[in-house]
View 1: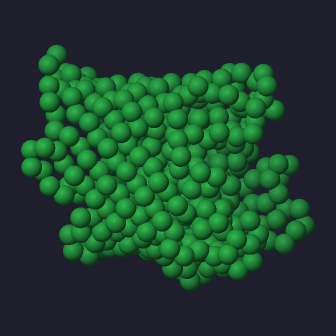
View 2: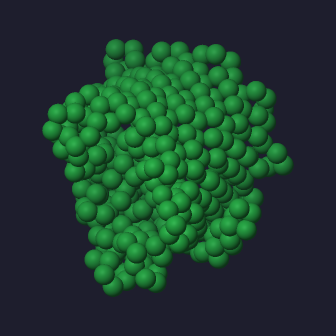
Length: 406
């Protein structure tokens, strides 16, 4: 066990990549709105996709242009267009699309209209409709490729209730982070969540609330009705014990609401417990993540989700699989302007369904260079221990993002 863990760590240290996930900076604000532009290159290297021998790679260059109008009588609007062009890719990858989901993208990622209810005394209440990037409890932006996730949705958000933030909405379609099978296009949720299972969905109606009215305690809950597919309820808690220590908890339950025409019903539960400890400028988070029943619907490969394991580069151990149990350790720190991040998890599977146990480790180093340019190093390695007599497998992932905000 120790020998395999050491092998995993050495694989990760030998991997190299860079990632930059920076916020857009305004080009100008001349009273006619705020323009933003970003130029970004992404180079990806993987050695395990689709049993392809050797290393699959792809390099793309992406341009993001955005505009947000000034507010007039409570109304404002925004647009974001993203174009990504492959520069180089390994043979058989369809310009990076099939193997490592880093290929061509051409999408109007945001096109929204927003109304703020200040006229009615509700300065922190608004309704927003159209294509938009949402980073809440259920939907997460997860900009781990050339674009953030976006949804076509109508949502009402208010923070005018003391210590409470509420969001209610309906999402019609989703444009994912990944490029595989044109996932960056706006697709129906039955294709995003459970493709080829016979479901037909008209979208997701959801609500979420975050409450901070009790000293040292934050509680978030959400309810999502995936029309024609499933009902999902979940939440999280964070209790601050001291300035250095906090306790964390997550839960989720999902079940089918209509099995007719589908190949199988859906039923799953997720639980997670962890504690956070700050020591010597480093924040440590050891925890436990458990999935019972079927595979989870919501995670970074589908809609995103505010869960403790964050963005795993490969999801190689299968920690969203039904019947899996995962122990993890997360660590973050900052040295000057350099941000450092590590995530390790070991996952035990239900061997009647998944014929391996697995582990994965991710390292990220982010470094700004001046006011506009940023780079980072993001690399990972995974290991699967076969339970069926087959050979164990190892995998590596490396990414280089170089980002310039104009």
